[in-house]
Length: 69
Length: 241
Image (cartoon, rainbow over all chains, first blue to last red):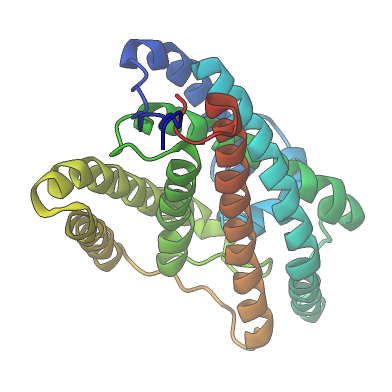
């Protein structure tokens, strides 16, 4: 057994919250906006006039279980 | 560190979205076509001025489907990587692969399976246009409650497992999630707007394809993100931080 070095079982170190927070705020807002456009725009509410967004993502919206029309 | 996780989350999410779109194209599109045929037959029985076709069917089931899933995948993948950043190192020393798979399973349960049980996906021809506001509010309400209940259960899991051991602690926190989501599902009103004579097999196949596609998305996201992150953080070797 001599010469065999066992690596100590290391526990992963937590990432400090203050390091995560700015990324979470930025990417979180962006992600929610994208989900809104795929899931709900020109359905119950509309930011853009017309039906193009709704019609373009139509099949995906149905299959992702968002209420479509 | 966080930026590297976010980048991997976006990449894994887009890939997962593309896979789920492929699954949807094969498993879900046939029922959408049959539902649209049903809708057209109803409209011909009671003629109304035809709606102008803004986007053709071939674009809807091709580029449109692919875009919807890959954008949704990128958004979910980004959020997923941030949850991973928060949970890593705070989850009983789970390694990246295992933590990613566990988080993806929790995400699928909270955002896919449980809302589906209360407000299942509907193909075209189902749902009255005048109730879209109420149906959207109820669906997003159920989604939010389910997600918050999962966050609560996951937070409590650490405290429970410190007292009861990891197996029993996980069971108790799972029971907390089931209780909160179950009470919400009982309290919220039902939605059932399936027209008389709508073919049951089309509805069944559509809903199966819908939840199947979301299972593909979350499974691919959890496994691909976990694999990439494991290699990045540990050089593929176990036990090296």
